[in-house]
Image 1: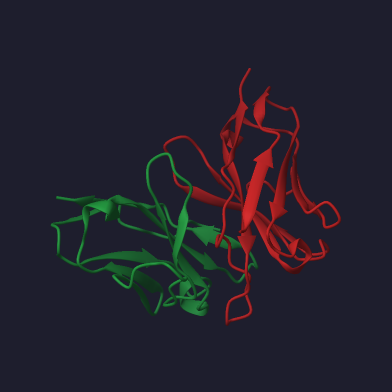
Image 2: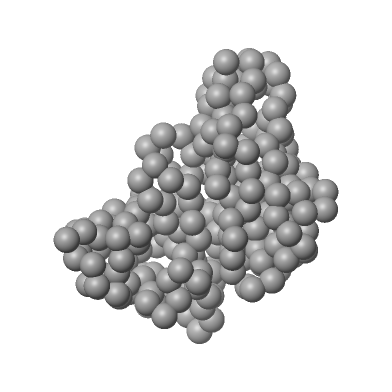
Length: 123
Length: 110
């Protein structure tokens, strides 16, 4: 059974930093692209970032580019999201999701999701 | 990276069919077949319902179907049931090598 378990969320002041972790099990972690998706309270889903199987290729939404860094440790089956220069608008539940390959060759987000980690940015 | 456009709400009576639209541009929905749909019940984690425009993951009811025409993708729910009441989101790959979600549609079963 595929499982994704996030941790690392919490309350942080504007301008602060936080690192989220997501441990994967039940699948070959190094073979999958992984994504982070966030959802502010009462709002919709927003794609944040993705990383390829070996961790060498990354992409970011414009809203977090230059502030967030996605990475993965395949030996530990762990995905990370380092969040710096946090803003009020970054407050959200952050989900890690697995990204399988579709027939078009793109690695779409979301065939399996973690339970989410709440990040609150507030003074 | 503008969000895809979805209607805020769609409603239908039990047994009816409803369709949710997801409109983008030629740089996302219109340019790629990498369009997915998710269902999210309140307080729950999103669930993949459709991937690659028309494909259903194992375990998803065949009452859910996807299609695409031009820059608009659609999710159709046939034989609407009370348990289908939820929020639905589309997502698409884009020419910027990133993904974008729609704003979400609240489905109400009357």
